[in-house]
Structure formats: structure tokens, C-alpha cells
Image (cartoon, each protein chain N blue to C red):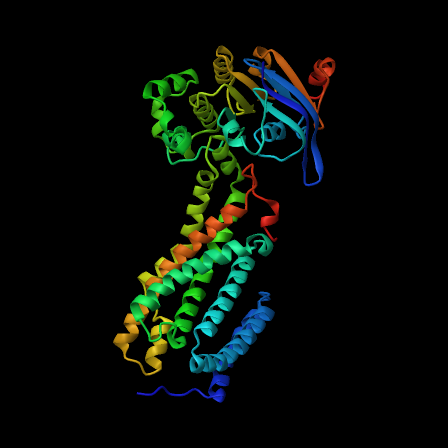
Length: 262
Length: 224
């Protein structure tokens, strides 16, 4: 079975849908019109380029090239996490990059290396899309957890000080804020998982089916990727929070002012 | 021997000097009232002593040893600090009371029921209060519960920031009598009340500076 091809002309028809969306945003002066236009433009250019790039990547299928591409994805994702969370790139970048890399490598190793087992194991057709899906879906959890953690510390400064002055270690004083951050970051993902297949048909599964794949295989891939995303999101958010804690306080356990970028 | 000494302590916050050249010596067992108009730096002084606010210059000595990054945690474990609007933490009043004993360092020093009853009794709190949700307590109950928690820590140096602001005169007297009866060293920020009548020494802060001893009575009459 082959997929029905969408031509560039067909794509333009879909893009027309953005006109009523833009009219609503403009009419109500939501202030998002410019950002929406730039975002859609960026998405279109990036995906078009990636489409071309992936063709070459799949053809060459080199361990080093695939690895380099994943590294680029990790660096961009990490920049996006720190920017999204309003944190200083200069202070936190190396530590959060290590945390994001560790969680991604760990989960990708299990998913691709042990479950999917392509030949070779670094086969770009499997490694790149799966790693990309993992990173893309974990991005939000990482941003929310870091943003919430530092916001909670600032909003509940008296609580933090009380814990320290009652004899808590830095880790113990941070614990309520860490819990809040992880809960806020993970609750929407956990809820989405519970309704998957009823309320929403996940993108990867739908994509495989539209691409002519067997629904039963598509479903198994989807289950694997959902579990992997959940695991990577929790592990990644946790490691990022640990990295944040490690570098964000001075010797008196006070939050360093230069941790926050805004 | 002094238990706490501040030498030429200066604290700056966001480029503004909020405490300037503070020299202070607390002898063991002394009960000291710290007074001053709002914004004079009283609460900031307590926070600076605890290492919560950064010290621009000067030294803090505890039992003649300088307090610094290496021993700040150990120092905090020897001090009881109670804020005007204390954060209780925990679901119930009992959770809040025992919060410090959930921390690794204090886990082995959890007080007995007898000790808890004794401290609650001293402050006029009944043990039935412990079952209540911490958020349901009144301002006065919160202040007394926070002080009870501090008393259970079994430390000798108390830094108190207007801890009787929400209390009736009878409860204030009860608290002051608890603090004065033992060997505790107390530095209490207050705006008058039972502390003034029972504590032996008064310090007056004005615009971030401690007034000289001879000016203190004058300042307390005109500015507080």
C-alpha cells in the first residue's frame, strides 16, 4: 500500500487555513500575529531543509554524521530549554546539556538499541526520527520543570529560608520546589497518555498509517515511543533540576542572581 | 564569653546600603530587644546574621569562631529563627511542628510526646491543635506553633522577628516568660509590649545604623 502524495499545491490549500486564524488574532489584538507568522515560516523552512537533509542522511547513513546531527539537536533543544525557562545560558548551559544528553542517550539506547534493533544500530531512518521525537516531546517538560522550580523558589522565598534556618540541607530545602516543578511538568503528559487512542490519535502512529504502514505495527511503535517519552521527560527534568541546583546557589545556599536571565 | 558578635557589619542590597557598620556583642544568656522604625533594617540584621542576606563587609562570630561559607550550615543548626509571619510547612500542625526533625541532620533528635506537651503547655497551646490543618490556624496560633518548634530544636541562640505581633497581651507575657526563664540568648525584634518590660538590654536601629548606647533611650521615645 502506498501513501497518497501531497503536492506543494495541496499544501498551499492547507496553509490557507491560517488566514481565519490570523484574522481572529488580529481582530482581538492578541499580540501573537507576528510570532505566529514567524513561527510558521520557521517551521516551513526548517522542515523543508530537514526533508532534503534527511534524504542525504539516510543515504550516507554514517555513525559520525548521525551522531553529529543528534548533537546539534541536543544543543538546540538545550538552548531552547534555558531560553524558555528564562535561565542564564552562560551559567547553566554545560550542566543542562549534560543532563539532557544523558537522559536522551539512556532512553534512546533502550528504545533503539534494545527494542527496535535496526541494522546497523545507528541506522538514520530509525535513530534520527525517534531521537527527534523524544527530544521534541521532552522539551516542554524540561522547560516547565526548570521554570517552575526557580519561580517557586522566588515566590516562596520565606519557605525556602525557613527550611534552611530549621537545619535543612540545600537539597532538603529545595525538595518542595522540586516536587512542585516535576508535578506541574509531568501532570499534563500523564493526562494526555491516559486519553491516547480515544481523545487523540498520536502523530507518529497516524503518520505511519498514512504512510502505508500496518496499524498493528504503528500501534506498537506508538506505545514504545509514548513510554520512552514519559521516561525521558521525567529523567530529563529530574537531571536538569539537579544540574540547576548544583550551579544556582552560592556557598550560603542563596540563589545566585545571575542564574535568571530575565 | 560572647555567644554572638558582629564586627563592623555592612549589608548592601541592590546597590543600597541597608545596614552600616554594625557592632554588636551578645553575651550568653542575654535577652536583647532590637527596636527601630519600619525599614530601619531590623529584620535584615537577623537575616544577615543567618547568612540569608549577603554581607558586604564585616564579620560574624559565633562562640568566637567566624561564621563563613564553610560553617554556615552548622551555625544555622545552632540558631532558632522565627519570623513574624512564620512559614509552617506540612499538612497538619503536627507536621509543621516536627518539620525540622524530618531533615537528615535532626532525624535522631525527634522530641518525645512529653517534651512536645511541655512546650505546647508553656505557650498556652493544647495538643488537640496538632490535628488541625496548618492552614486553618490563626495568626497567633501560627506564631506560637513556630516558637514551639524553635524551642524543641534545643538550641541556645534565638533570633525572633516580631513574633508576638498577632498575640493578645496574656499570650505575649507567657511567651516572654518562657524565653526569659531559661539560659537562652535572645535577640528579639519588637515594637514594644511584654518584651520591653522584661528584657534587660535595648538596641535601637535607625536607617541601618545602631545608635550609640547613650542615645538609645532618646531614640526609643521619639522614633518607635
